[in-house]
Amino acid sequence: MTASVHIDPATLAGLSEAWGLSPAARFASLGNGLINRTLLVTDDGRRRVLQCLNTHVFRDPALVMRNCHTVTAHLGRERAAGRYTYSVLELVPTLAGKPAAVLADGSWWRMYDHVPDTLTHDIADTPALTFEAGRGFGAFAAALSGLGQDAVGEVIPHFHDPVTRFRAFRDAHAADRVGRAAQAARECAAALSFEAALAHWQTLLTAGLPWRITHNDCKLNNLLFDRLGHAICVVDLDTVMPGTLLFDFGDMGRTMLSPVAEDSTDFTRVGVRHAHFAALARGYIEGCGDLLTSLERDNLVFAARLVTGVISLRFLTDYLDGDRYFRITHPEHNLERARNQFTLYAALTAQQDALQALVGSG
Ligand code: GN1
Ligand code: MG
Image 1 (cartoon, rainbow, N blue to C red):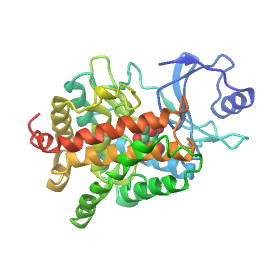
Image 2 (image 1 turned 30 degrees about the vertical axis):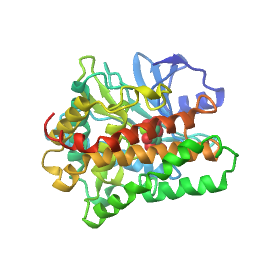
Image 3 (image 1 turned 90 degrees about the horizontal axis):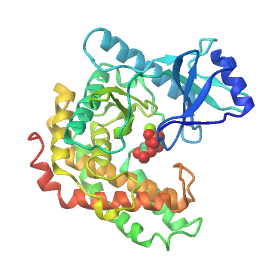
Image 4 (image 1 turned 90 degrees about the vertical axis):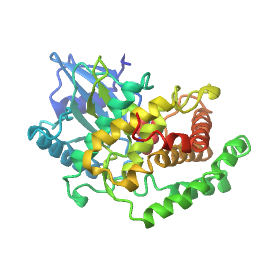
């Protein structure tokens, strides 16, 4: 997971000055995020995590940092009071006492303490892991329920909004700015089938689906585990903002139910593992405690469909737009991700009744 990286001299000088790093500081890349750049810094025997915020995605980085501070401070208090048992990310302010450093080139950097003896998983090997992840993310949501609705601002408006994402896909398809629509004809046809989910989404909004402070990026690899498979710490707090628990559970389902990663081209293996689903739902219900309403609980399967469909649309839209959003390693990467996620969406749709019967039975 870590490989030594070279930092350009101006950035190195800026970071060293901001946090007082020694000339012996060593940098390695960390994690598999598609948006921000993450580095592990080892200096003076201490390990820290440095992140360069992607300001093309996060247009208001000062708001992102304010939210991160609000959330970590709140979770720290919950933990001190014994109401939250997981570790909490600790922001390391600059020497000037700022939550982030803005370098001469305009880049935004922030630092966290490294959480020792932890690792991430890209695939959930066992139902026990999905149970742990569900409980960890559920406890995170429950702990944040004590924060006022407007304690955190909306960093990316309409981030998971399926109506907006569907419209963005249709616009990108119609514009076909880089001439890729023909190559993606099969995926575009699959994308149109997502419209069926929008009607149910509307009924949930009408029925008063609760709006809460949610994580909004509950991928399995945004949770740190210890070597025994216990969930230790929720990370990647940049998208914590108002949302619904369905967004969080949906992202968990999307990243834990299939036996292969979101960008695997082994499409025949993409599918839903029912024992993993049952354990995930049980863990999430337990972690959320009293928070979860029956409307939310009854829509956990729909949540997995919804978010898988939305991310499929986002990958496909980015492919049609010329790969301007997600980090890619090869030209067809976003198309492969879209095909993988639409395959999972179709499986979740076909199996929704069987999955629904498993909620509460894991
Ligand atoms: C991005 O940064 P990362 O890799 O944790 C994205 C998520 C997507 C995910 C797909 C701010 O998350 O919404 O689900 O990629 N984050 C943002 O892997 O767009
Ligand atoms: Mg993330």
